Length: 334
Ligand SMILES: *[C@@H]1O[C@H](CO)[C@@H](O)[C@H](O)[C@H]1NC(C)=O
Ligand SMILES: *[C@@H]1O[C@H](CO)[C@@H](O)[C@H](O)[C@H]1NC(C)=O
Ligand SMILES: O=C(O)CCC(=O)C(=O)O
Ligand SMILES: [Fe+2]
Image 1 (cartoon, rainbow, N blue to C red):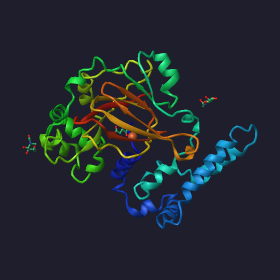
Image 2 (image 1 turned 90 degrees about the vertical axis):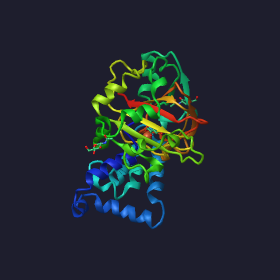
Image 3 (image 1 turned 60 degrees about the horizontal axis):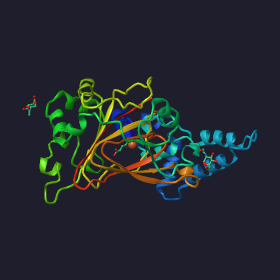
Image 4 (image 1 turned 180 degrees about the vertical axis):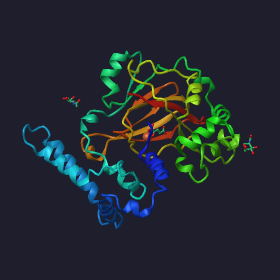
């Protein structure tokens, strides 16, 4: 879950601010990127997308022909032509942010081919979870994994406001080293501290003309993570050997807002527990699978955990409760 491409970009931007411009222009792939960028911004045509889809489709349709090397050939030339490893030249990214999504390697559409809705399961064993979902990129909702969580009673805006109070080490840690995503509220919330300075009437939508808000952040601070873990337990279905990531991701906000459609770049799949409120998700297959797979939506109810590989599914969210804020906590797993 740590996290969206744009979230990644944000951290890159920070890290790249100090690099002089001409050093960036000397990176080996700068010219190539600039060319594609110019084509796109003149609106000449979305040549890159057309090529990506064509390559992807031809690759898929020929993949089943044994010894007919075309899929391999296409994959190879695709990589050569477009496979700029943007993360090795991370400082190109902020300049050409919009290109990042298209620099994903081609995905096999087997991941999404037969999936048209999300499955809901309960009482699943670790082995079954591992075989069917953990590493298959098949999204799933587990409905019975948070029954004994204190978080269900305790997590609300005030809880986090107390935890991340002004000058606290928890807040300082997030502001200094963790990621913060204010989504549509980026003009008013520069840091997590700004969120908790919002007055409670607004936070709880009591204001007559309340303005909706939605934010997410990673908690990368060890002692805060330890505290948070007093309120939830590691979901029982995760494979035994799977390391629990030290990084918690928390998303919180009012009805009507959520995360925009994006795909992440983080290696691992993740789980996200819906502690409070309801959240509508839309999952969209990658563009090269547009004709093979379907987009679909569903709502995660309080008490449910969604497991999703956010690196292979585009996803967007939308808080769908009537009058309650949505609060989720989650993490990557391996
Ligand atoms: C998809 O479903 C079809 C028909 O139900 C089946 O033959 C095929 O093996 C499935 N493909 C995958 C990748 O699961
Ligand atoms: C936070 O720390 C600053 C600087 O040490 C201090 O001036 C300020 O009063 C503190 N604020 C609170 C609410 O403790
Ligand atoms: O929960 C959300 O609103 C977004 C979550 C997300 O983007 C993710 O888990 O990767
Ligand atoms: Fe995401």
